[in-house]
Amino acid sequence: MSIHERATTYASNAPRRRRSLVLALGAVLVPLACSVESEDIDDAPSDRDTTIEEIVENLQLAGFPAAEIEIRDDGEVWVGGDAVVSLGASREMLGLASREPQGEHGSFRQYRTTNLVAPSVQVICIDGSAFTGTLSDSLDSAIAQYDLEGSWFDMVRTNGSDAGCDAEITAVVIPGNGGVAGFPAGGLPYHTINIGADVVEFGPWVARHVIIHELGHCIGFRHTDFYDRSISCGIGGNEGPGGVGAIHIPGTPVNAVFDGSVMNSCFNLGSTGEFTAGDATALHELYAPSPTSCMESDVCGGQAPDGCWCDPSCATYGDCCPDGPCTTVETSCEASGSCGGQAPSGCWCDAGCAEFGDCCLDGPC
Image (tube, rainbow, N blue to C red):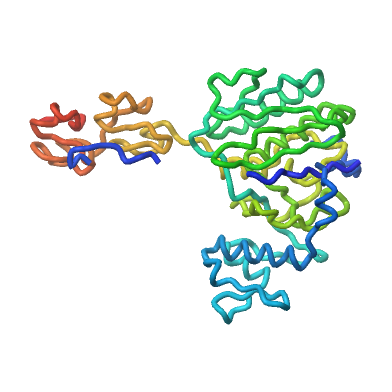
């Protein structure tokens, strides 16, 4: 009953203003993975090819231009014409922990793809109109799990309407007992999760786990044990970067372990879809909510991380944060000694500020 999921290959605020103006019921080891299609098996790269591919990708991510990277006939990867780079060395260049021996594979951490969901995506709608019964209930529970953890986007269940959505993921029922999804592209999450109809035979918690896992791929998560699928599947090796990257997420655990993540390659009969501490860290690291408070983000007189403003002109522009505008020494005429001129933050204290709409909070003076 293999369900390896094959994640289908994809996938500033402009400076404002003016004037100089500027799961676990018991671990039953029945690997149920997310489905490898036949061409993936027939054309699977050798271990050497996989290693070369990862070294090259690591070097490019570390900033080496492609023209400086050379793959020799003997399989060695050189940079600069005279430096051999091993797999371990390429990982260290990216700040990844070196892997201690653990069979032919080692311990590594939680990963993401090169592409992620853009900050402009605030509402991700999940069209669950094709789901009924247990699948429908499990979808609701999966969405609630993501929203409970918190991120800069909200996941919302819909039934065909995309009103108010910044992006949409359609939930589709397919034959089988696994799941298939893809990775983000163009700042948008992957558009579809395919869930096997037979997943419900394992119960609602396993169904929730599979849905959460596939949604994880849609927002850019790789398998936690991509480097050694046998950790969760009992069999299997290294998936490799797969053309979409396998970038370590800072702060996540050093090892992938059985039942250690909703993003392990394979689930089992004890999977529940509960986020582990590592899963929560990964989600927060990539998609932590941005403060919308001037005081909380310490930007009185400037712009908060989510784009709202805390300066005197925000009332004119209609883009104040909930507790803006607010004053610091830099935005106060009196406190900064700027009466008749410009305060350090750029707001003004002269007679013309009312005309230009850029007075400090206590200006003009």
